[in-house]
Image (tube, rainbow, N blue to C red):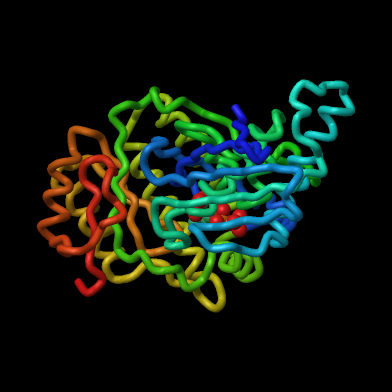
Length: 356
Ligand code: DP6
């Protein structure tokens, strides 16, 4: 519920977690509306792990909309931010024209001040924009009292953000309509469906990625024939198989599909011209380690996936966490000063050195 301060400022604070895709989104068919060339599927982390926290305040005293990101003021006129603000205000107008004035304490002419923080490094390939935009849209909707297809609004901030609007296993349907109304996220199964599933983040580097997702995927759309093949001939079947594996809690199939999809995404990056390199030597050593580990047990017990950066995200089941973490720390002894920001994550978050 919105709170009010003595100086007539109404505000709401919300948090939204990061999501990690197991079927990747890479490529847009419409850059303005952020409509993807293929559907994707992700797992949303718990609220108390990697997350964005956003406060939106609203007051008749505010002269203009403003935004602060991790304590630093940013340009509010970025088109994606403007799209989200415009769409939420459109929903408010629609609600009022439908005759609902129940939350009319806030005038539409009131400006907003937005303050957002991540508890992990921004733009290090850890899906910070996903949590950030999901949180912004959700917080604005609570402040202004609107409901509706909020994932379609978060999508216009950052594509992957639409999936962070839900917990558990979430599919982003690419949709068919030109206006993007059917390009929305949907929960496939809630978080409670697979309680043994665990996610470990192996931090290879917390630096900003050299090529951002938005620019990288645009070059891939323009130059990679593998991207077209994937969108036309791979994702649809893989999506059905993945949803079945999740429904049946079949880790072996889930893990193999996850690794194959990550590998195909990075193959598209190499097929892009000029090529994009997100993985580094440490990432590749982690890939080999996971395959050697699984081979040892003759079953897929752990699976890796990499987004637009070198950090590995590992999916596994609770019963394998401690052994796999021991194996990782044996081959990648943790730095004494590394991994500070990962305090509070579940067992087994490990910081790896780039020099290895
Ligand atoms: C590799 O959602 O960050 O993480 O829509 O341009 O903001 P924009 O891109 P973004 O791309 C995420 C790409 C990915 C894969 C994924 O999360 O599905």
